[in-house]
Amino acid sequence: MKLGIMKWTGRDRQRVWIVVECRRVPGRPGDRIRLARERRRRWAAARRLAGKASWVMLKTLAAAGVAYLYAVRAMEAAYLQRGYRAYGGECLVIPFVFYGAFKAIGLAERAARAARQWISAREGMACRERGIPAARPRE
Image (cartoon, rainbow, N blue to C red):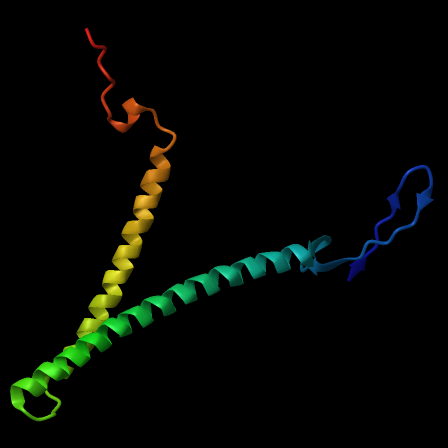
């Protein structure tokens, strides 16, 4: 549904049609939802979701890089120890290394977020509120 709005400009009355896309709210005959606002709200939600998904992908790739480096070193050490290339118990540890790296990156991100919040909360505080003693006058 499209609504037209009459607009007054200056001395003369001009008929200007501003097209606003709306949708009727079911069960409420007089109420309408303006689709432009709804669309902006949905795009904002999509941007938040894309930001979170990109962060999870970045964490996954970083953890995979750490696990790959561990796997290369473990295979090399096993080859030097055995004298021939074989896959043994060192391969069983690789998923645990990946999981540990993934969790460590998440904890570091959480600590950085908490530190940013702590710093922003302390910015507007006076010295006494922060716990810093006032300077004593010299005699």
